[in-house]
Length: 185
Image (cartoon, rainbow, N blue to C red; front, side, top):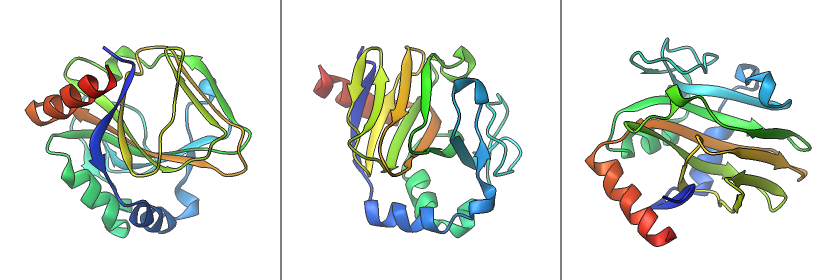
């Protein structure tokens, strides 16, 4: 199975940016420092409904108040015909890097996967998964196997922002994942 594959889904770059611009700058929180500096995020769904809570938890998840101000993000989340766990906006600032690592197994099981929807990116972002450089464009939907070694570097002048969705694998997800894998092969 490939380390990453593009789903046949697309969202409006303009509407994603509009929703991103509605997010308060005061809500951004540092994300796990061991993986690198200048990496921050905001939860759109968290286990306690708080936009500053980004940890994974095996309990139920709920939308945070940020969602009511970012209606297109809500529309994007609602378009996934599966249960959603944690949903976050993650920013890697210019000049920042996240060293090679694998995510915790509890965050990625056969019953759930991680999807990325790029909102802002640039040609100088290097997203390497299992030795392969991914080229993601705004509005696309990508499956990324984060149990494989991966790293990220932003040598551009602008922040790199992704909507990152952890979701339950059901028939709808399997159908999109199978099609994405077939296309990637």
